[in-house]
Amino acid sequence: MKPTCLIIDDEPIAAQGLAEDLQALDLFTIEGIASDAATAIECWQRRPVDLLFLDIEMPGSSGLQLLRHFPGKPMVVLVTAYQQYALDGYDYGVVDYLLKPVSPDRLKAACKKALEWYALRHPMGHLFIKCNGRYERIEHSQIQWLKAANNYVWIHTGQKKYMVYQSLKALEDQLPRELFAQTHKSFIVGKQHIRQVHANTVCLPGVEVPLSRRYRAGFLQQLQLTRNFPPVG
Image 1 (cartoon, one colour):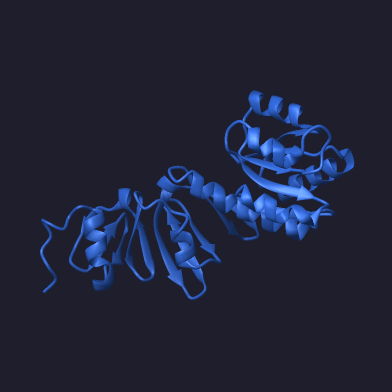
Image 2: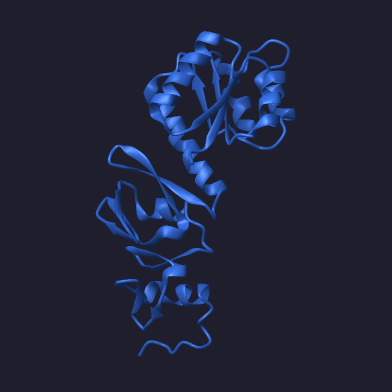
Protein backbone atom coordinates (compact mmCIF):
# COMPACT_ATOMS: atom_id res chain seq x y z
CA MET A 1 0.00 0.00 0.00
CA LYS A 2 1.37 3.41 -0.99
CA PRO A 3 1.31 6.37 1.45
CA THR A 4 -1.75 8.57 1.09
CA CYS A 5 -2.07 12.28 0.38
CA LEU A 6 -4.63 15.10 0.25
CA ILE A 7 -4.42 18.13 -2.06
CA ILE A 8 -5.65 21.41 -0.52
CA ASP A 9 -5.89 24.25 -3.05
CA ASP A 10 -8.66 26.70 -3.91
CA GLU A 11 -7.57 26.90 -7.57
CA PRO A 12 -9.28 24.00 -9.40
CA ILE A 13 -6.93 24.03 -12.40
CA ALA A 14 -3.82 24.03 -10.22
CA ALA A 15 -5.22 21.30 -7.97
CA GLN A 16 -6.19 19.09 -10.91
CA GLY A 17 -2.81 19.60 -12.57
CA LEU A 18 -1.02 18.61 -9.38
CA ALA A 19 -3.23 15.55 -9.04
CA GLU A 20 -2.42 14.45 -12.60
CA ASP A 21 1.31 14.89 -12.03
CA LEU A 22 1.11 12.89 -8.79
CA GLN A 23 -0.82 10.13 -10.53
CA ALA A 24 1.90 9.97 -13.18
CA LEU A 25 4.57 9.53 -10.50
CA ASP A 26 2.47 6.82 -8.82
CA LEU A 27 4.15 7.25 -5.42
CA PHE A 28 1.13 8.31 -3.33
CA THR A 29 -2.55 7.42 -3.27
CA ILE A 30 -4.61 10.62 -3.62
CA GLU A 31 -7.50 10.48 -1.16
CA GLY A 32 -9.11 13.72 -2.25
CA ILE A 33 -8.90 17.38 -3.27
CA ALA A 34 -10.15 20.12 -0.92
CA SER A 35 -10.68 23.75 -1.90
CA ASP A 36 -10.79 25.24 1.62
CA ALA A 37 -9.82 24.53 5.22
CA ALA A 38 -13.23 23.24 6.33
CA THR A 39 -13.41 20.73 3.48
CA ALA A 40 -9.84 19.66 4.19
CA ILE A 41 -10.65 18.87 7.81
CA GLU A 42 -13.79 16.98 6.76
CA CYS A 43 -11.70 14.89 4.35
CA TRP A 44 -9.19 14.19 7.13
CA GLN A 45 -11.93 13.13 9.53
CA ARG A 46 -13.26 10.65 6.97
CA ARG A 47 -9.82 9.27 6.14
CA PRO A 48 -6.57 10.60 7.67
CA VAL A 49 -3.67 10.83 5.23
CA ASP A 50 0.12 10.72 5.45
CA LEU A 51 0.87 13.86 3.43
CA LEU A 52 -0.77 17.20 2.61
CA PHE A 53 -0.03 19.19 -0.54
CA LEU A 54 -1.10 22.52 0.88
CA ASP A 55 -1.68 25.88 -0.79
CA ILE A 56 -1.11 28.92 1.44
CA GLU A 57 -3.34 31.67 0.03
CA MET A 58 -6.94 30.44 0.40
CA PRO A 59 -10.21 32.19 1.26
CA GLY A 60 -11.27 32.15 4.90
CA SER A 61 -8.16 30.54 6.36
CA SER A 62 -4.63 30.41 5.02
CA GLY A 63 -2.70 27.18 4.73
CA LEU A 64 -0.41 28.19 7.57
CA GLN A 65 -3.39 28.96 9.80
CA LEU A 66 -4.81 25.57 8.95
CA LEU A 67 -1.58 23.90 10.07
CA ARG A 68 -2.00 25.41 13.54
CA HIS A 69 -5.35 23.70 14.02
CA PHE A 70 -5.11 20.69 11.75
CA PRO A 71 -5.93 17.42 13.55
CA GLY A 72 -3.10 14.91 13.65
CA LYS A 73 0.39 15.57 12.35
CA PRO A 74 0.59 14.69 8.66
CA MET A 75 3.64 15.57 6.60
CA VAL A 76 3.21 18.78 4.60
CA VAL A 77 4.49 20.02 1.25
CA LEU A 78 3.58 23.67 0.71
CA VAL A 79 2.53 24.58 -2.84
CA THR A 80 2.15 28.30 -3.50
CA ALA A 81 2.91 31.17 -5.86
CA TYR A 82 4.31 33.30 -3.04
CA GLN A 83 7.97 32.80 -2.22
CA GLN A 84 7.85 35.06 0.84
CA TYR A 85 6.12 32.31 2.84
CA ALA A 86 9.01 29.87 2.55
CA LEU A 87 10.64 30.68 5.88
CA ASP A 88 7.29 30.69 7.70
CA GLY A 89 6.57 27.26 6.26
CA TYR A 90 9.82 25.78 7.47
CA ASP A 91 9.02 27.06 10.96
CA TYR A 92 6.19 24.51 10.89
CA GLY A 93 8.55 21.68 9.93
CA VAL A 94 7.22 21.18 6.40
CA VAL A 95 8.83 18.57 4.18
CA ASP A 96 9.32 20.88 1.21
CA TYR A 97 8.18 24.13 -0.41
CA LEU A 98 7.09 24.20 -4.06
CA LEU A 99 6.57 27.35 -6.09
CA LYS A 100 3.82 27.46 -8.72
CA PRO A 101 3.94 26.54 -11.51
CA VAL A 102 5.44 23.31 -10.18
CA SER A 103 7.75 21.45 -12.53
CA PRO A 104 7.51 17.64 -12.68
CA ASP A 105 11.16 17.29 -11.65
CA ARG A 106 10.70 19.55 -8.63
CA LEU A 107 7.53 17.68 -7.61
CA LYS A 108 9.36 14.37 -7.94
CA ALA A 109 12.15 15.62 -5.67
CA ALA A 110 9.62 16.73 -3.05
CA CYS A 111 7.86 13.36 -3.21
CA LYS A 112 11.15 11.54 -2.77
CA LYS A 113 11.89 13.61 0.32
CA ALA A 114 8.40 12.89 1.68
CA LEU A 115 8.93 9.15 1.16
CA GLU A 116 12.18 9.36 3.11
CA TRP A 117 10.37 11.15 5.95
CA TYR A 118 7.61 8.56 5.78
CA ALA A 119 10.11 5.73 6.18
CA LEU A 120 11.56 7.43 9.26
CA ARG A 121 8.09 7.96 10.74
CA HIS A 122 7.20 4.29 10.25
CA PRO A 123 10.35 2.53 11.47
CA MET A 124 8.61 -0.80 12.10
CA GLY A 125 7.02 -0.95 8.69
CA HIS A 126 8.76 -0.66 5.36
CA LEU A 127 11.26 1.12 3.17
CA PHE A 128 10.72 2.79 -0.21
CA ILE A 129 13.71 2.52 -2.54
CA LYS A 130 14.29 3.67 -6.09
CA CYS A 131 15.24 0.67 -8.22
CA ASN A 132 15.17 0.30 -12.03
CA GLY A 133 13.49 3.67 -12.49
CA ARG A 134 10.64 3.15 -10.03
CA TYR A 135 10.06 3.11 -6.29
CA GLU A 136 9.80 -0.28 -4.66
CA ARG A 137 8.33 -0.97 -1.24
CA ILE A 138 10.25 -3.48 0.88
CA GLU A 139 9.01 -4.59 4.28
CA HIS A 140 11.65 -4.27 6.98
CA SER A 141 10.96 -7.84 8.00
CA GLN A 142 11.97 -9.06 4.52
CA ILE A 143 15.42 -7.44 4.48
CA GLN A 144 18.06 -10.01 5.41
CA TRP A 145 21.23 -8.06 4.64
CA LEU A 146 22.63 -5.08 2.76
CA LYS A 147 26.00 -4.86 1.03
CA ALA A 148 27.72 -1.69 -0.18
CA ALA A 149 29.51 -1.89 -3.54
CA ASN A 150 31.16 1.25 -4.92
CA ASN A 151 28.40 3.90 -5.23
CA TYR A 152 25.42 1.58 -4.77
CA VAL A 153 24.00 -0.95 -2.29
CA TRP A 154 22.57 -4.44 -2.78
CA ILE A 155 19.52 -5.15 -0.60
CA HIS A 156 18.88 -8.88 -0.17
CA THR A 157 15.52 -10.34 0.83
CA GLY A 158 14.53 -13.97 0.96
CA GLN A 159 13.21 -13.95 -2.62
CA LYS A 160 14.92 -11.06 -4.40
CA LYS A 161 17.79 -8.59 -4.38
CA TYR A 162 17.65 -4.89 -5.29
CA MET A 163 20.41 -2.58 -6.48
CA VAL A 164 19.99 0.93 -5.05
CA TYR A 165 22.06 3.98 -5.98
CA GLN A 166 22.43 5.25 -2.42
CA SER A 167 25.17 5.05 0.15
CA LEU A 168 24.99 2.44 2.88
CA LYS A 169 24.98 5.28 5.43
CA ALA A 170 21.93 6.88 3.80
CA LEU A 171 20.04 3.60 3.98
CA GLU A 172 21.21 2.95 7.54
CA ASP A 173 19.68 6.28 8.58
CA GLN A 174 16.30 5.06 7.28
CA LEU A 175 16.40 1.69 9.03
CA PRO A 176 15.30 1.20 12.67
CA ARG A 177 18.22 0.42 14.95
CA GLU A 178 16.13 -2.09 16.89
CA LEU A 179 15.81 -4.24 13.75
CA PHE A 180 19.17 -3.82 12.01
CA ALA A 181 22.86 -3.83 12.96
CA GLN A 182 26.07 -3.07 11.09
CA THR A 183 28.71 -5.83 11.07
CA HIS A 184 31.27 -4.32 8.70
CA LYS A 185 31.83 -1.06 6.82
CA SER A 186 30.06 -2.67 3.85
CA PHE A 187 27.41 -4.82 5.57
CA ILE A 188 24.20 -4.32 7.57
CA VAL A 189 22.11 -7.30 8.68
CA GLY A 190 18.51 -7.79 9.79
CA LYS A 191 18.69 -9.03 13.38
CA GLN A 192 15.72 -11.37 13.08
CA HIS A 193 17.50 -13.28 10.29
CA ILE A 194 20.69 -13.99 12.25
CA ARG A 195 21.23 -17.72 12.77
CA GLN A 196 24.71 -17.83 14.32
CA VAL A 197 27.43 -15.41 15.38
CA HIS A 198 31.08 -16.47 15.18
CA ALA A 199 34.23 -14.56 16.01
CA ASN A 200 34.53 -13.00 12.55
CA THR A 201 31.30 -13.87 10.73
CA VAL A 202 27.52 -13.67 11.09
CA CYS A 203 25.44 -16.48 9.61
CA LEU A 204 22.20 -15.64 7.82
CA PRO A 205 20.01 -17.93 5.69
CA GLY A 206 22.32 -19.21 2.95
CA VAL A 207 25.16 -16.74 3.52
CA GLU A 208 27.87 -15.63 5.95
CA VAL A 209 28.74 -11.95 6.20
CA PRO A 210 31.91 -10.55 7.82
CA LEU A 211 32.02 -9.25 11.38
CA SER A 212 34.93 -6.81 11.55
CA ARG A 213 36.89 -5.71 14.62
CA ARG A 214 35.66 -2.14 14.16
CA TYR A 215 31.96 -3.07 14.47
CA ARG A 216 32.20 -6.20 16.61
CA ALA A 217 31.80 -4.63 20.08
CA GLY A 218 28.82 -2.49 19.09
CA PHE A 219 27.21 -5.37 17.22
CA LEU A 220 27.51 -7.75 20.18
CA GLN A 221 26.17 -5.09 22.51
CA GLN A 222 23.10 -4.61 20.29
CA LEU A 223 22.50 -8.35 20.45
CA GLN A 224 23.21 -8.37 24.22
CA LEU A 225 25.98 -10.94 23.76
CA THR A 226 28.85 -9.02 25.33
CA ARG A 227 28.89 -10.97 28.61
CA ASN A 228 28.82 -14.42 27.07
CA PHE A 229 30.88 -14.04 23.91
CA PRO A 230 34.61 -14.80 24.00
CA PRO A 231 37.07 -12.10 22.87
CA VAL A 232 38.82 -12.38 19.53
CA GLY A 233 42.26 -13.92 19.91
